[in-house]
Image 1 (cartoon, protein in one colour):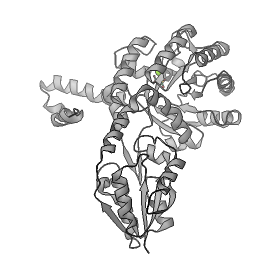
Image 2 (cartoon, helix red, strand yellow):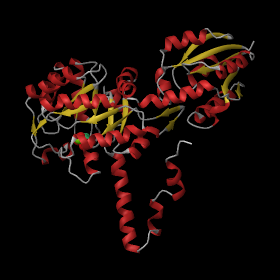
Image 3 (cartoon, rainbow, N blue to C red):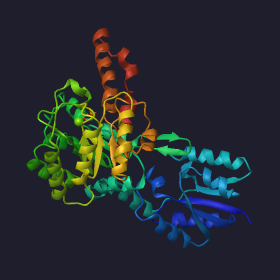
Image 4 (cartoon, rainbow, N blue to C red):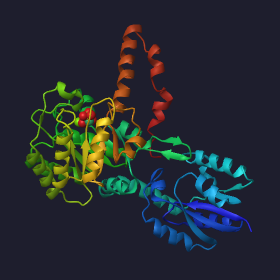
Length: 431
Ligand code: SPV
Ligand code: MG
């Protein structure tokens, strides 16, 4: 009897699923793969029920002989260990994010004479209900909780900055195929530098919370991914406790506040800008007050340490971060403006001795040679790419303006521009 393999990621079974299981079981002895949460979250929404429950659900299906766990979107490991004679899939994966996975399956099967059988994908009314569920992913409760869940699921999250609806859509929808995997960003960072710069203002806490909320609303309107807000210093503790509840209610997942006092300037100035670090106890008090004030269990406060930026030394960074965690911070951000990640790695080595599991955030703008994989191997849990969508757009915009002036027309700037056809269809209408 032939061995047949198919993989499921669904948490709600409908008639389309059972039809394909029936057809798969007709081919031989059917082994069902259950895709892990992590693999599912890498290309679509978070599963509503746990992996264990999904396994039990699939086991109960007529025709399924046993269920195995598939850890990646790629079928490589499964094919190499099970060597199935037939792999079954709906024909819907010929296009879209899974098309590369499909090509790899065909290649691996052909090496030993295995066969891919694709059956027409049948749409069902349940599917429409699931689509509307996807749309509800941007509701505040669902969005806010997702960052904590992702942190529990993945060793290291990749976060891209967004500063308006359009960049939010780019951060939401960007995908890259790497081998048999599909990569996407886990969350968005709403940077004070970008939010200020895009408004033509300096990054000195001049853009007020009302205005920052406008930016957040614009992004949240069109996206579903969790949001980490750059909260600058967090302002006065007396104001912070109110403001963070507003953010929580909006569905923001986390705020990062930095241990500076007085007029805040951007950290990438290094010691060029006169900056004063907040006294440890005062900053701890802000964290403590924030943790008491928050209403939901899943909102997170990250404490950002500027000791390395301000040349205060490793011991100071460690003492401060330890105190911030003890004050209740859900995680820390260790900032550095060195060209290499060495001091961040040195910090992590010692910090991990005292706080092995506390989430650590880094912003590798100046040490951008370090990959997420390398940073993760040193114990980083969140990598924020803090300003890159704005910085990449600006040179093209300025060049377009200059070329238009130079030539008295826009023809020469056209290669820098999205085509009219593309801009018209970039944002589709609902119907
Ligand atoms: C920001 O993006 O506004 C930040 C990170 O605070 S940095 O610019 O590196 O200070
Ligand atoms: Mg900032």
